[in-house]
Image (cartoon, rainbow, N blue to C red):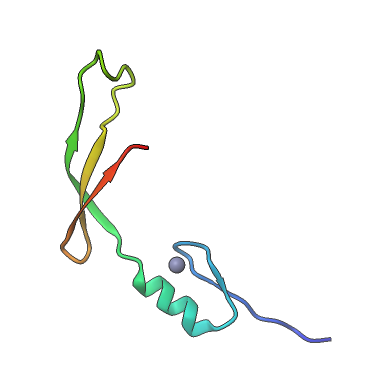
Length: 69
Ligand SMILES: [Zn+2]
């Protein structure tokens, strides 16, 4: 019987056969630090009240914009 080892990136849960690939995957993920802006539309347009987009400051210093689908 042969034992098989797998490695899973703890951030995105992708499975790898090679340890280094899982390490590289984890290192590549850039984490969000804080929401710096949230955009909203009026009550008449959006009864739910959630923002339509948010600007997020990332660990590498960039600002990324995320929009509701
Ligand atoms: Zn990953």
